[in-house]
Image (cartoon, rainbow, N blue to C red; front, side):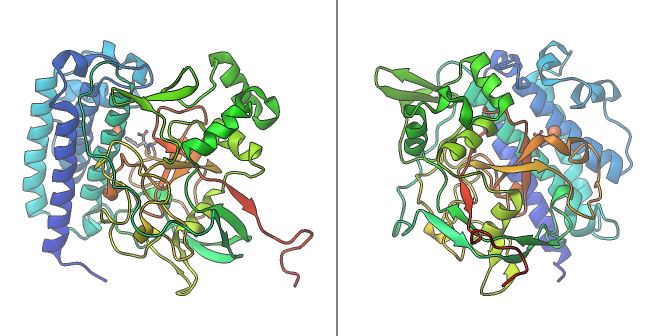
Length: 444
Ligand code: AVJ
Ligand code: FE
């Protein structure tokens, strides 16, 4: 299937523009002092993200694709994510907020000229407008990173957004869904803007398993807390247990106790923890410990993707749980339309064929799996996007949060982070095996 060149160009331009509108929304209302301050050693100052977005766009589109010289060679090393760890970035001679905005805007102007004149075919970078889509996804990923910085900053709220609607339509009928055994197609070789780690499509055998219909809620998580979950070593993997002891962790990040009730701080507002919302800001260790306490486990990455993409009637994998259509606001809570997850059970229109809900949007979902390459993986177009992060130290998250834009979220999209991280918009759902006891694969 080929797409008209004009349509491809429009799609690329729209994706780039949408990302820049969001970037502006995350930075325009912030004072100069706050843009250059470091709100957490885990994060860059917002002004770094701003110029890094422009620098990556210049690197890939103007230098690598168009063959131009660097616009400002002296600043390039400042915005190379591998040269300077986040904690050191405030000390660098960074561009001022105004200079960063002007630089990113100048790059963007040249990129639009390039997009007008470049055939979107002929090389792997250009086919389907890939490299333009990659840069739009990169900016949206940094927009999510900047939203994390907003959540970490102290002080009066800067951002506002309407709350999600209460769940529409009938609530789910069961708390878990059986996904029957059998192979499915994991990953993609067809999705035009899929990133290297999502490829190639390949067959996976998955045993039968049960998976939660909705993400684990704050109310369910509070049962674990009330049952002493943070004080019983047997639920925890050893490094997670040391981590919570060392830091005195006994609740998700941004929660604090007020008498008998738990409150949370969310983008500068303190509010009671809503019981029916998916739990947010938990580490992999917390998700894993909760699952063990519940007599369950985290789904593997393959299980998660089978639950999200396998259409048993059609016998194939779809792009999203609801099919192949791009997400609409009826399907999922994406794109920072809201500054919180929707309540568990929302978005019946976004359910999978077997009835699993909210796999896309709301919260990133920790999986049991390490971040590893698929069979046949090839780094493209740069090793530092995925390849250098493969290995047992990073766990995979799936499905996307309320803070990720649809351009960087789909059934195949893979995110990853260290298992201690909890400033990210992370939650989870649990699973359990369903193979009959004593059964051996291949025997009837
Ligand atoms: C895929 C979200 C882990 O933010 O570190 C941004 C995305 N890569 N710039 C990250 C990314 C290069 C990446 N994650
Ligand atoms: Fe980046």
